[in-house]
Image 1: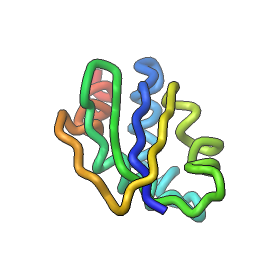
Image 2: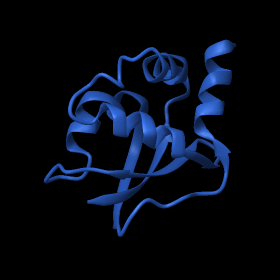
Image 3: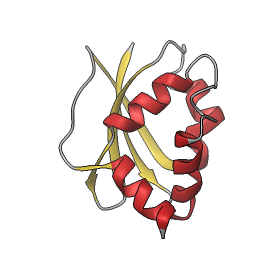
Length: 104
């Protein structure tokens, strides 16, 4: 299924999240690492502290494995909604925001 996701990012964890997204740690996670990395590439900061993205997930509970292994370390107030396919959001690239946090 496809979902849109809205979540609040944890500012103090942004540099670590960027490192894991870009050093292969998350990419190599099975079965969903590649989708997590791709989803973060689609993610946009839509309002202060809030990120939105779309993601494909096959868990019986939306994003259960993704949250257990990655997302719950970096986000709070995660909300999901079923959609028909990937959705694009307007706003600043979340990866750009993460990269700036990692370099400061």
